[in-house]
Length: 119
Figure 1 (tube, one colour):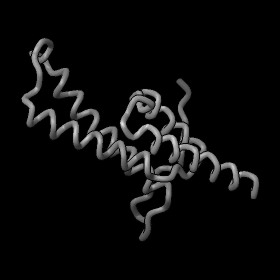
Figure 2: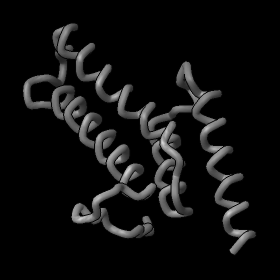
Figure 3: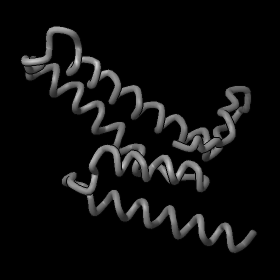
Figure 4: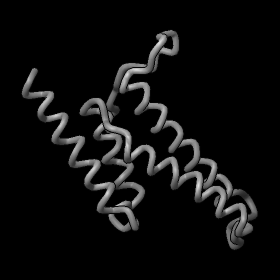
C-alpha cells in the first residue's frame, strides 16, 4: 500500500496547525483501537470473551476516538485518504453513524476541492 506523507507534527510551535489537530485525532484513534485489539486477541483469549466492563470501556474509547477522527477536518488530500481508509477498514458504512460519517467525508472532499481550485 502506498505511503501518504504529510508534514510531521512540530511540537515546538506555540500553536497547533490543522495538520497537528488531525494527526492527534488519528493517533488517538489508532492507539485506542490497538488497545482494544490487543485485549481481544491476547494469548488465551481465542475462545473467550473479554469481561463485559472491560469490553465496554475499550469499545467506548475506540468509538469515541473514531468519532473524533471522523469529525476532524482533513487538512490535506493525504489525510483525507487516511480518513477514507479508516472508514473502509472499520466498515463504517455499517455503523449507526454512517450517514454522519459520510457527511464529514463529503465536506472534507468539497473543501479540499475548493482549496485546490483557489490554488
